[in-house]
Amino acid sequence: MILQSLFQFSSVLRSAVSVHLRRNIGLTAIAFNKAKELDPVQKLFVDKIREYNTKSQKVSGPVDAGPEYQKDVSEDISKLQRLYGEGDLTKFPDFKFQGKICQENQSSDNVSDFKL
Image 1 (cartoon, rainbow, N blue to C red):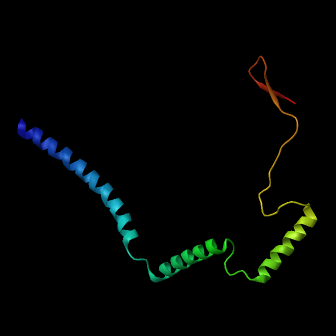
Image 2 (tube, rainbow, N blue to C red; image 1 turned 135 degrees about the vertical axis):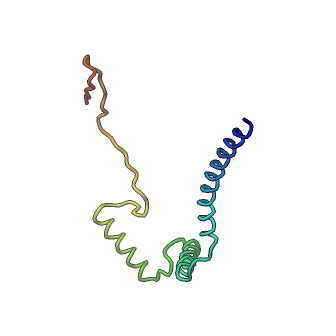
Image 3 (tube, rainbow, N blue to C red; image 1 turned 120 degrees about the vertical axis):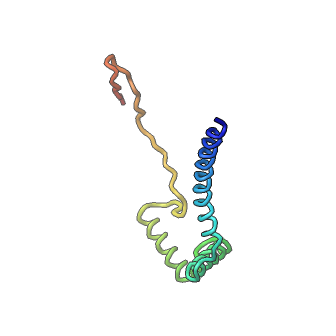
């Protein structure tokens, strides 16, 4: 009796351990892949992205943008202001909706009717 319950316990323990190991092996594979060194092309690409990020934070705008770029941007903004009116075109517009408000009325047959 004790031997049989011991075998049952050991099979339950084996299945629990196998599930635990399968889960952990999956997680450790991901961790080891991140810990491995990137191939040279990926490493170069990631380094360039990080370098561009630090440069753009210092400049607070596009990196290596010369006077021609600034001239083109100012010309485009002036064209848009002439076409669409005044205002700050570098900022997201502020929408204000004005008009009639819809009111919901419940009818006797539980169908919603909307009135303006």
